[in-house]
Length: 541
Image (cartoon, rainbow, N blue to C red; front, side, top):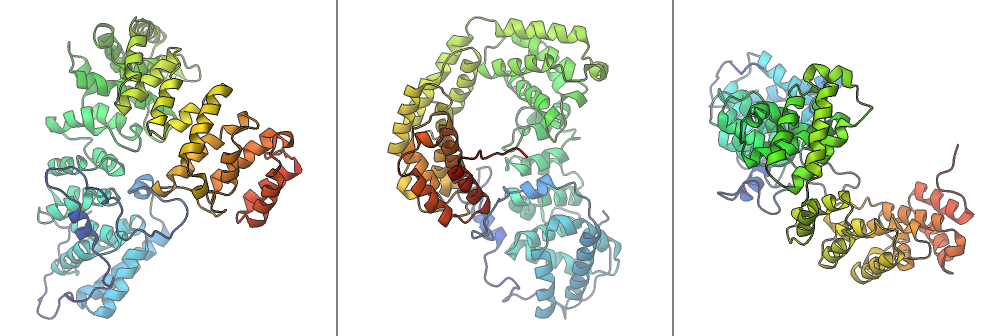
């Protein structure tokens, strides 16, 4: 992308309005984000994640901040995107000639109502190719929208435009906007284009985001030579709230994982990240990211990692990492012959398997797991629970204890039992804790996503397993049938179908017929009819 180099015309007859905007009096995204930035604190303060242009009335699947642009960031523009870009470019030329209300009212909706991801690349190419555009006016328009705009797509486009201008003048503005995951990609690209040495600034940006924004920044730091940034990538930067698999290979290479593990005594933080990265690379073989089969140092790094663990730490996270490596080494579906060029020879794999067995057979793991199950630290507890199950220990009572203490994630875990007595304890607690009357407000087409549906999600964890316990939990099923969340109703129907009529309560058929009358979802109506007719919900063709 070329930077703008054009003529600079007089400013006497051209100025952007100071008392009017095409987005009305809606709040500025920049000012909103700026208000949620606290000095000395990374990221945004509470409430900053929900931008003021969020449409609260839209139903359906909501993308997490930055997820849409992150998932489709490599999409190639087609003819329609090029047409949109040309239309925007024509409207932009008109504004640069005359910043009238009419011209701005034509330009801004084009920016705001179209996906910036689709039009921004061809738009920038068109701008860079047009030597007649006034760069000072263009920058003024970009800053005006970036600092005052009320719509994310328009602000994204403005951020991209700022990347056309070299220098640090817009660095602070882009870093502030980029703290929101929805805008981080555009901040990263603009900063990379505008700054001659952007790595330090990108690193600052990356430390202030955790989700898709972190992934976008890490991808742009893959070739950094700064030892501080490389260390950060290795021990912290790979972590994100989406999938470590997206960044594992990048950070293993950029952070020099093989060299770090090749030392006699690598730091504990390096061993911790090595386990995370190796597991992520293994899992990445079945995902959308680069896996261990394409990581040229995979075999050597695995050997170094296991060798250090034979003589050093006893960490439950390391136990899980070694166990996952062992499972990987035993997978028969992998085309190991194609991987021998990276060192995955039969002899090497056999040696690694012996190391895994030696580490996992050490005495003391069960004691560590029991200690972890008693921990008040949530992460420590769930790690210990996974290890305990692997070692044949039963953590059900500890899950139930945490559930009683208010950890709602444990509804899923306590339902993973075949013991009727335990299930009775769970169902009694559920009827005490879950506000069934507040859930049974009548059927609607809600997906049940977001914090407002936390109790509906808790009910879901129970309903999905009640099919295995005929006749138990009728009050919960009854609430599920009247829930506004589609999944609750489907789970209740699946349980009733699995029970069979002989296990129904006397009122069940009446409630099902009422549900059939009120049901707004065609698919759910069909399932109700099947349950009433005694037909399986999933019929063979």
